[in-house]
Image 1 (cartoon, rainbow, N blue to C red):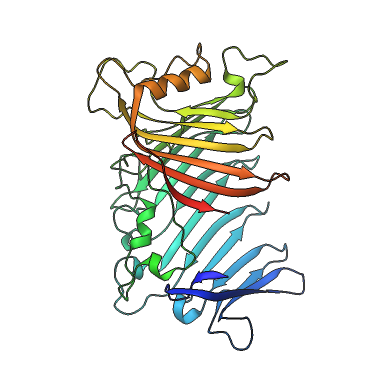
Image 2 (image 1 turned 45 degrees about the vertical axis):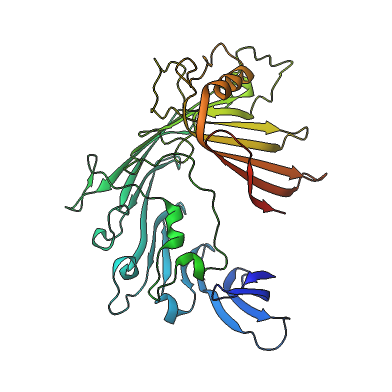
Length: 379
């Protein structure tokens, strides 16, 4: 059952059927979708292939995937090649171009990723070889250089963007975009992507202020239990790009492995708010913080996200306590007392007796005060 028809209009009695086909090796070869109104019988009101064909090699790895109705997708397909150790070497998606198409509608190479691995199969580099001439500002092709620590964990990613001369340049910047805006991007018939997609996502709004430029550097650090303890980006865009300082149960200053107060590998607090802000500022965005609550079964039952936080007043600063000497409860209390956050989201999760997610809700609040408004409820 689906609440909307294939054209994005309301159709409460619409039913969707998906059919999968397999080849002689038992591997999926195609996916077809049918839309009915009322009941699944007779001829469908709308029928289309989602995946038209999947071609695999002798190692049973997909080498080519053709998508949708070729007359609609303009022959959209992906091709994947592998090295002698069966690691992906290149993945490219291409399509034809209709006459008179402009902007993103004129893109012929949707993606073209090249991968470089080291001797122990750590991914060291991903380069985006799309045609730069087909993409506007905010969509420049990029190259990621990935570093690992001695335990093979990613500890830094440097991102360079292709300049107007076609080279990846460490000084080249690119305008930041919000992926949520894709829902309102116009199609050639004047409708929006979101209006024409009955399976569209309805994402939560951004809680932080977006940076003017795309991310250029990400840094990660870990503790002795391999819990991530630090995740930062070059612009400090908390929660959207990075999580700041992450505190797990084992990071508490009084942690006792024999009688732990908190679960050692569970994250309780994440923030990029400094513990030494210096002095009062009426306008400075201090950052944000996230607090997580766990039930007796160990599942997350609540998560509250605070963004665009400012000092409460001249004498009450929005700052963290010293993580090395303060408990997570004391740090949470200090942040709640000192910070007024312009955007806040609270997520609630209910689980059944088999640890299956039964219901999820999101509540929003602005201005740091007042009631929480139910925004999303899923069962």
